[in-house]
Structures are given as structure tokens and as C-alpha cells.
Length: 94
Ligand SMILES: [Zn+2]
Image 1: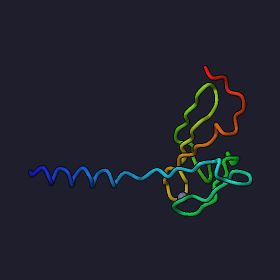
Image 2: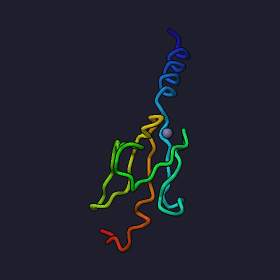
Image 3: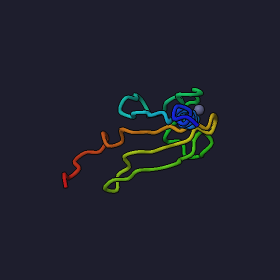
Image 4: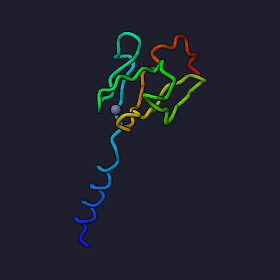
């Protein structure tokens, strides 16, 4: 097998992995709901029924949620939510 073939294989397997879309909550107006970047289903972070999305991963720093990875229940794409920290006031710098 040639090195080029290996490279192509790696490229292929990498592109197979579903790309995680990132949504910056500071860029969203209103109640924080946004359309799924892939299928357009409106996802509201306030919705906790898990009918529209499921929480896949969370990143918590200093007891504050800074990052949330969710999966759209409709198209199963992963969406990373950032920008939570912008709503937090007065975090000590230590
Ligand atoms: Zn979707």
C-alpha cells in the first residue's frame, strides 16, 4: 500500500465522522432557540423534553456551564453550544 493510499483512507474516515456544528449563544436573539444547522428544526435550550434534542456532553468550569453538546433528535447531527459564559457576571479571576 502506498503512502498516498493511506492518506486517502485517513481522509475518508475523517470525513465520515459527522461534523459538529457550533452555535454561539451570544449571537442568538430572543429566547435562545435556534434552527438546527442541518435540518432546520427549531431547538430551544429551554425545552427539556428530549423530543427535539438530547444532551450529549457538557463542559462545566467553576460550577458554570460553558459548553453544551447536543444531538438533534431529527437528523442526529451534533451541535455544540457555546457562549454561556457571556451571561455570567462577576467570575473571580482565580
Ligand atoms: Zn437537525
